[in-house]
Image (cartoon, rainbow, N blue to C red; front, side):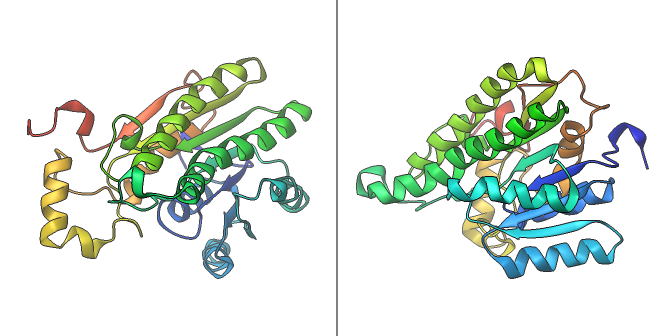
Length: 263
């Protein structure tokens, strides 16, 4: 194992671990030596993924939670600590797009709240709980937030989503500055279009999907979650990124390198 990127002996918690990026991140962190807590609403999915990791020789625990329920978060960390120890890598990967295609003036306040709480408020609450415990234990740590290219720009029918992701990007920067003195680093990964339940292969392979990806991404395709492993392990490692905090890695296939229509 490459010691530069090793997370041997550390405890990682990943939200949204039942599918997509979260599931991949849990597997990758385990492969590099971390004990992993998989969190998500769908208990059968996170338990299946945890069992897969254990079958490969890793340490993994599935803990079902609705992260929009802030009162449930301290108990989540209590269970994690009792089983595996203090969480010193937190990956806030859970997210929803909301009602894509519906203009903001047709959305309900409940639609707005659901997206904002899932994509932004829950990141704040999870990070706050992890941070308090790390500071109390005088232990360094890493928080990695999954933002989006939607943090940089608006989108039709995506008012709540882009607002939340932009908020998450700036939350990342502010948290990083607040935690400098405690050796807790906070960074973000901002993917482009990701192959996931939000954008499945069937959509990418459709005529609409092909045209959308070609128009949106200079590399001309969606990113597979496994292609984010490098960014994840760079930020999770203490050795590889000891001088990196408050930044966002744009794993976007070139989206930010050119204006739309310039490729």
